[in-house]
Image (tube, rainbow, N blue to C red; front, side, top):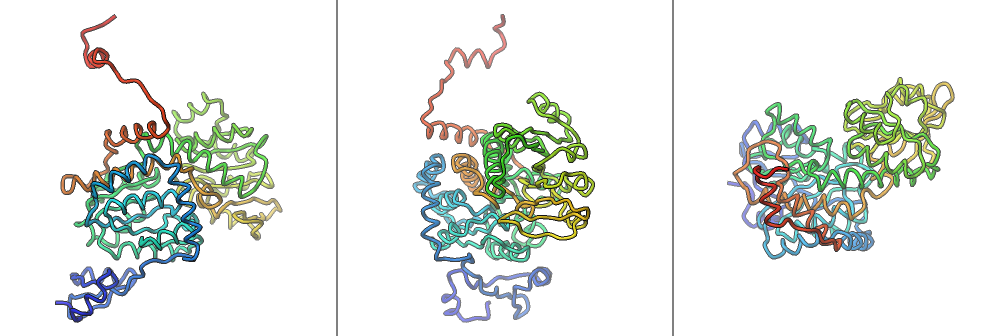
Length: 467
């Protein structure tokens, strides 16, 4: 039995204090990673007080409320889903832990899940992407938010830890840090978890690797890989918001500049297209032959990074891999070259290499650091190598995130409905979910499409009729 009195248990019945029974091995592990538990009476553990939220400035809530309202007007699919959730309450009794960019669009998703009956906990998936006013609004609305712009690495993992101090049923992730931390340090949580979702290419790569190694212990839905996400969010969203971030950070003229795009996946294609539209001469760096060939056919120059380094005025990485731009490339760059990243983690441009070849650095303007090299040349590094579209701008437009987060909402419902029926592997988004999102988006845009006649359906499903 817990060692505190019943009235004390009632006093802290809002989740601030909980009796938890742990094995001695679990106690040792959890004390090792953060020392957040007090041990008494052998195996009885009292969890230390949990802060209900932590944001930069709660007084910003009214400002954030207006931002969210602006986004809701441009996210008709998610608002339609919210109406259904309000009636059906698919998440009653469930806790959903989210590690996402805390933006006005994310707020629309979080509000939708809450309307569906879920208790929501939210931390930022990137130290520089949080919109502080939005975080404050959600905190005032009873969401357990742990996010503020400008977090240190220690802050970032402290916030993840706050999410993991509650019993989670569903995990919604962006980059797979939350899911990975559960598997590495909080394995005692795994039996309860119905499943998780991953929003990014980078995260899906990590989770598929875990599945291949047999390390994945609960089902994951690869939201990133569904067409209504990556064909629109990655291409149109990343394309526009990346250019927006670079423009806000530097205010340079893109027309006539040599713009090097590293990676020609859906995100890279979007950025290359928008840069071309702004008048840039686009150079693509790619390692996969089919993607490189497509870039050539799309009218872009394709070359290796070492050669591209000689020509580029602006370099943008969007690959999901590490050390894409390294010392040998930096040493070939022009004086005044600009380096930016729109891949999920700040590892695509080697910061240690940039530091090693520089004499000094200084902050030139918001989100721009000047690195002076030993030979006097200067390189300009944007947003500390973090996602430039979120750190220096506002991220993807609401209209695009409408589809991405509609997938997240419906996949959360799918996980809740399939409790106990799913294996610990990476699943594709169910086809009916993808089609439903597309149909609702078309409806929201006022677009009507044709339907197949019975004769056409029969023709497409048969083989007897020929020429």
